[in-house]
Length: 467
Image (cartoon, rainbow, N blue to C red; front, side, top):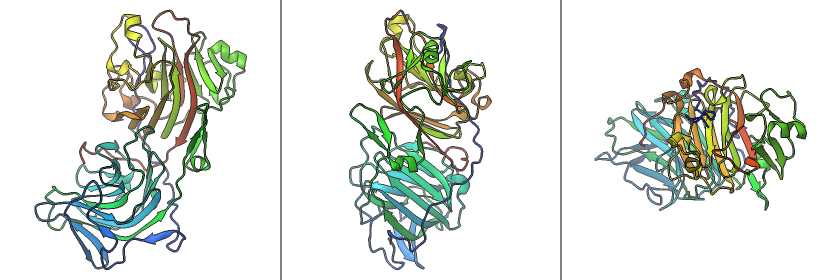
């Protein structure tokens, strides 16, 4: 944490996303086991306009073996749902939009409950394969770059797990890989699949969305993580298959480095001198020691998803670094730091007034943490869930999404413009001081640190804030 009272500053990174290699669509052949057709090519049998949270009255027809959706008279829209319910599944279809037109694919739609939408908004300022659910959850997938207007595009989506892990491909290119943060518990666990006509747009008479070759394959429910009685989390085979890997083994400092330290795993004695200790499955940042932070040995993390548990002592000050550099400059400003602080006692103990971005969860110097704080009581475990994809960064604390921002649009109050900061770097944890004298030995402790690299097509500019 940095401020006028001479503590290390923390900031947000602006990252220019490069075009990453397209991930192959793992879709099986049409005759592969488990796939079931949802459209007979001649009728809307098996489909309904009611049974979800967004019932409407759009104009749905079958024309030349294709489902066609248009606004009804009075610019009325609505969804067309499967009569069947689905929990974990893959859904694919061919989609053609005569623009300007706004459509989407919806998953786990159930009355009075919350599902999610893969947007198919082919209008100026629209967005392809953003995630929307009573508000934006994720902007700027690679969908805009892969989409082709007024042309048949093959779209495949996957919905799996609880919280939902959502993925999408367009014409075989992976464009979205997003997981709803843990702790958000108002989503339906099962529901209908829906396709949409977004009403109220007063689209031109020839504007429409067309769907063909719609089919679904149900998947066995599977969790990516399993938590033991002690709170230790381990990966399941599904988690490994989805790309998750541990950053901390819970036993020693393998994979971690400190500035100026050896380019190898530190011994226990070296760790203690630096102010680090591994104990009880935790990486502990001690109040006394020489290292200002500990970082991953790997220093080229760019687009990734991270989950990490942490707890802090009274008056402790720490932080989570992402895309930072160990080059002698301040990693809070050459990259980005997400604040970790004793929100409850810092101001009274230090005699200072915190700015919004200095509270736990703040993207330092740029984005304030929402209040009231989502931080658990001092001494209890918290969970950060962070996603960095191109210029888009999102942070959730204990299941509450704190912010979801395009860092390229931010003007930091502290630190350089985001475009001048590193595009890739290490992941690390700050080892910092206290607001006042304290008898605590451990300032912050970390456990269950997992990361998975994301490879999606490069995004274009963000869409608007309403869907």
